[in-house]
Structures are given as structure tokens and as C-alpha cells.
Amino acid sequence: MDNFHGSAAPLSQNGFAKTMDALRVDAPTLWALITVETSGFGFLPDRRPKILFERHVFHRRTGGRFSALHPDISAPAAGGYLGGAAEYLRLERAMRLDRQAALDSASWGLGQIMGYHALRLGYPSTQAMVDSFEASEDEQLAGVQRFISANPPLEKAFKYKQWSRVAFFYNGAGYTRNGYDRNLEHYHDSYTLAGTPDIRLRQAQAWLTYLGYKPRGIDGIIGPGTRAALLAFQKAKGLPPTPELDDLTFAQLAAAANGG
Image 1: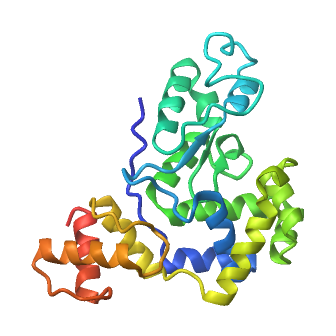
Image 2 (image 1 turned 90 degrees about the vertical axis):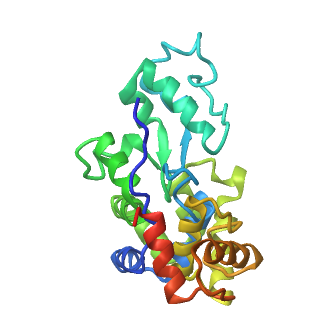
């Protein structure tokens, strides 16, 4: 079975700016979508892309032929979620039944793009989309841009912050059940007032997480958890302790997280 591990590079300033410019939106608007879809980060601590396996999609794409014996991963209605890394257990079981339908039936990465959209978005295959999403959040965000740009009403609604229309076109007709539109508006307004995440700090938080230092969030905001994790890393590497992220610590984190 696939292990779904790639480089898992965190979002870069260039990657964020490219998507923001392509969609012609401001930073709070794009961060609002990222935050609502994946709590702000596209990878698990083990570097696999965040996913959610949708059993009702698998049911549809396999004609329901596995639903009687495997109702937790194939059923007419959504559900059966385990969350986090356990979603890969569900995906892998489905892959043993029908690999292509299983990949198509999971949502992937920062924007939780469903696998079955891959061909429509210009990827050669679902596998190709998954491979690109394993590499970096920049690629995941590029997938979000493809998805939005492929739907002109969604693209227009996103540009003009028409949150209920964004929610409908991005998340489906049932968006009100989870307050999807209200959450988008809330985070947009919050980022507008308080500022958007620091991407450099967010990269460091991702690397700390990969290395097991637990900054208690990958949000681009310096807080007690991040400071404690930075100090623990600095101590382990014999670096001068600093209360903020300095250039030396950033460079050492990048090297350690990327095999340097």
C-alpha cells in the first residue's frame, strides 16, 4: 500500500502570494478558507496530507457493492469518521477493495479537495494530484486555486467575499449545518483586525512538529507552546536560547527537518 509520505514542505511566502494573486483576493480571505478547511495546516505530524475519507462518495463510485459488508467505509450517507491519522486506516481498507475509487473518495490537503476532481482540475490522474499534495502546502494551495478558478461563480463569490455563495459552491448545499459561511466570515474579519499568520514562524512551527517538539499549533502566532518548543530545540542543538525565532534557529530547524 502507499505510505503517502512526501517532502511535506510547509507553505512558503511565494506559494501563498502566487495563489492570492491568481485568485485576486486579499490575505485574510485566503487565510479564512485555509483555516476553516483544515484548522490552518495541510499535513499531519507524520507528514502525510490531512485527509477525510467520505464513505458516501465511495458507495456512489463503487455502485454500493461493498456497503453490506463494510458499512463504516461504504454507505449511502456520510459518516464513520475517525479523524486525524485514523482516516488513513479507512482509506487503506477502501483501497484494498477498489484503489481508484478510494483515492477519489478522500478529500486532500489544505483545501480538502476531493480526489475525484483531479482530472477536471488538470491533473493527469488522482494519483498525480495526491503525489503533488504530498510534496508541499504550496502544491496543495495551488490545487485550491485550480478548484476555485474552475468554477467562475465560486471564483467571483470568493473575490467579493459573498460567504454564503462561497460556502455553497465550495462545500455543497448542506453548508449551513456546520456554519461554514459564518466561520469563513468570522476568520476573515478576525484576520483583518488582528493580522494574518506569520508564514516564516508557521514554517518553523511545522518543522518543530515534525521533529516532535510540539509547539501546540501551527498557526503563525508566537505563544507559550511555540516558545517552549523553540527553547527545547535550541537546547538540544546547543544554540543560544532566544525568546523569538532568530535566523540561526530557523536555519537549523530547516536543516534538521529536511535531513540536513
